[in-house]
Structures are given as structure tokens and as C-alpha cells.
Amino acid sequence: MVRNDLLAQCRQLRQDVLEMIHAAGSGHPGGSLSAVEILTALYFDVMKVDPANPGDPDRDRFILSKGHAAPILYAVLARKGYFAPEMLPTLRSLGSPLQGHPHMHMLPGLDCSSGSLGQGLSVANGLAFAARKQNKSYRTYCLMGDGEVQEGQVWEAAMTAAHFGLDNVCAIVDNNGVQLDGTTAEIMGVEPLNDKFRAFGWHVIECDGHDIHAVLAALEEAQATKGKPSVIIAKTVKGKGVSFMENQCGWHGKAPNKEELAAALAEIV
Amino acid sequence: MKDVKYIPQRDGYGLGLLELCKTREDILVLDADVAASTRTNWIRDQYPDHFYNLGISEQDMVGTAAGLALGGMIPYVSTYGVFLSGRAFDQMRTTVCYNNLKVRFGGAHAGISVGPDGATHQALEDIALARVLPKMMVIAPCDSEETRKAVIAAADIDGPVYFRFGREAVPVVTDESTPFEIGKARLVCEGADCAVFACGAMVYEAMCAAEELAKEGISLRVFDLHTIKPIDQEAILTAAKECGCIVTAEEHQTAGGLYSAVAEVIVKGQPVPMENVSVRDTFGQSGPPEALMNAYDLNAKGIVAAVRKVLERKA
Image (cartoon, rainbow over all chains, first blue to last red; front, side):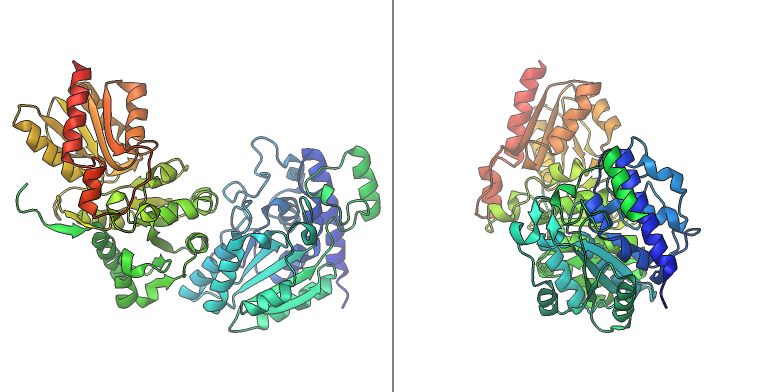
């Protein structure tokens, strides 16, 4: 079944991301656009969450370890009903709940603050331990960038999750191949990610991170995998959907001006 | 001081945790492969369901603790204070304190009295690192009994707490009935000529200094300033006003620790002459604990000298 609802949602979210970063005058479009399908699959299909009850102790958790992709998370939360989409253009302005990087105490629906890279997977593990201790069935999802896995703590956490068999953790790597200063291949090679995670004791699932149905299938496979943690290595394109942003490290952390916004929206909507 | 019992402060950490685990399901103890050192092996052996050893990975341990706290648990992360506050500083800052999570940091092997392991293992900057973090509470108990009380009292604090405690057997100067209230300096002895604010094992040294100086008719008002943040401003300002000068004593660098914390209070409210006993912008080294304390003037003699100096300035 083709999920036209989710495809439409993705177009709306890309538009939101571009408009809010334009309004803010700064922000990270590249890594937000590459994660659109991943977050859409999670929040609009897979995760058990209720915007009316954001503090539900039994809800599934999402840790945006690559905190700079905050715009796509904010757009998702707004469209999901956590807050009014009219608030999105306040991104990064003084006093706004939409901080440059997520701050959980300023916005309901955020499960953890983030922004310093490499820390989210440890947090996800901690939540998984807590769920296990309390006999709760919620799952914890953690989205990382592929540049982010250059942080050593990611691999400490990868060992922990495998050592303790945390099958209620699902890591997702937004494998867009580009980081702030250039491609990951140029700056600090991270491949082969699949073999690395396999060697660390993880169940590895690879998919096209822009094929919403492939992402849904991957998340289903992760959920069905018992006894070990799963990682989805989602092959993505940085800046996906806007031709002049795609695969350009220059669009890692730059806001589109008025003309660029118009050109970008013309490609998406 | 006669008939003083010597017990390592870390025993108090272990005992406090045992008490907590006995009655509470939400308490968890994490260690980074030094359980036998921090006494969390007592939890591992008696309450294995409350214990996780995360291996030699302090950053991951602190992050994991953050997740546990987000999930409603109260984790006590335990390792040497030097690695906890240094290696995992960013995790403490951004993932624990920024989120204001109920994570408790057990910083073991505090101070130079760690002894033969040498400078790499002696936490001399941890108070400074911990106390600059918004939301973080910082507690440096004076003996094993007070450490036990602090561990228990901190369980329900709404936010992160950092404790530091030493490795070696040090004099036990409090007992079960001695009052302990987080945020409240404990008056150890009355005096009028100079106020001494000490933490950790230096509290005993301050008591000895008071005894020594009493022979000359100099009376010290000694405080056990176990809670360095939030600091007891009232006790400090009153003592400054009534005694007219202050000496601080700590097993920590001069910069950023107890001395700085007390100075920050008096400069805005009641400026009086201050001297300090501390580690003077240098690293430690190997040696027997007592010999090291003496080599760095972290003893009653050092406090007496500091008092004489500050009294001259007061006059």
C-alpha cells in the first residue's frame, strides 16, 4: 500500500524546515532535510506517542542525538499536534521554546536535550535499562549523523547496548555522507558502518532513507529483532529535495535567503 | 585528638548506597570498572539487580545515567572523581545538568591523599569543575559517616548532585547523631578570633589546629562546609562579621574550590581578610598519603600558619 499520507507529510515538513530556517536566519537545513522520511516514519506511523500526553511514562522515546537537526524535529512535533505550527518561525529567537538545539524543558514532546554530538546513544541505552527495570514495553529510538559516529562515545555506547542485549533500543544513522567541513570520506572516514556495527554485536539493517516504505520496513525488522540492539543505516542525501543543497557541505549550517527559499520551495511543493 | 577512629570515606559511600538499595527500587548504582575501589562492589554483591558495571567508559556511563534518570530511576554513577569530572565533563554539563536530571556523581579518590597512584588519579579540580555547572549541587563530606548521610540525603534532591570523597582511612569526627543538612554549614567548634571553613578530611585538621591555637588563647570558629553548592551564605557572612577574618582548608586546587566559593560570598557581603590552605596550582605526586598531605601543607600545621597570617592582616 502506498502511503500517500506520509509522502504528503514529508513535503509539508520539508517546506516547514526551509521556511523556519529562513525566518531564523540561521540553522541546519542539510541534515534536517536528509532525516525527513526517517522522522516521518517514526512519528506518523511507528512510535506510540500522544501529543495530548507528552509525559506518558509508557510512550516510545526519541533521542535526536544529532541535535542540529532540530528544525525537522520541531516541524514533526508541530504537525503531530504538540504545538501550533504558527510557532515554527520563532526558531532560534530570544525566548522561543524552539532553541537552536533542542532543550527538553522548553518544549513538550522533546525526550532529551541534545546538541553536543555523540551522547544520544548512551541516553537511549539508559532509557532502555530503565524500561527493562520497570517492565515497560516502550522502545527508544536514537538518530545519529554519520559524521557524529566519529565521536568515541558512540562506540562505548554501542558496546554497552550489545553487551546488555538491549533489543528495545534502535539506533538510526542518517548516512548522508557529508559533514560540516566536507564529505565524511574526506574529513574522517567512517565506513564500513555496517561491518563496524556488526562487529560490535548489533543487528544491522540497511535501507534507502528516502523511501518511506523501506524505512517503515526497516523499523519493523528492528522491532522484531530480539536479544540484540538494531541499527538502521539509512542511506540518505544531505539537503534532500532541494537540488542546489543536495550533497553540499556548504548547506550544513546556512539559512536560505528569500530567493533561495523561493527556488527551494518551488522544487518541493 | 584522642581515640579517633580511622575509616575510609568511601566506606560511607558504599554503606549509604546499601541502605538506599535495601528499601528503594528506583536506586541504581553504576560503576566504570573500579567497583572494588569505590565500594560499589558491596552493591554488586548484595543487590545485583541495582548494579551495572559499564566498563572503562566514563562518558558512556554518565550518558547512560542520564537516560536512566529520564526513565524515572535515580542512578549513582561512581568512579574516580578525576575521571568523572574531567573525562565526562561535557556529559555532566550538557546531558545531565542542562536536562536537570537526578543523577548522583560519586567522585572517589578525591584529593592528594589518594597517595601512591600519583597525580593522574588525584582529583584536585573536581569541585571547581562541578560547581560551575548550573543546577549541580556539590557536597564534600568530612568523614565516612557524613558521606553515608550525604548519599542518603541526596537521593531525593531534584537535580544533579556531585559528591567527592577520599580513598584513605581518615579520622571519623561525626557520629550517627551529628546533624547533617544539605546546604547548611556544620558548626564544629565555637570561637571568635578567626573562622575556618573546611571540607573533607581537612575538617579534622582544622579541629586539631583549633586545639593547638587554643593553648595560646586564640579561638577558632570551625565549620564543616560540606555543601559547597548551594553554599551557606548566612554562616559565612555571620562568621566574617563576628570573627573578622577567614581561613579555608581543602584538598583541592586554590582556584575554583572551597576557597573561591567562600570568597565569592564575602566579597559581595562582608569583605574580610582571607587565607587558604589548598594545593597551589600544581599537580600532586606519588607517596604515602600522610607524607603527601604534609609535603603540600595540607594539615593542622598549615592551617595554624594560615591563621597566624590572616590574624596579622586582620590587625
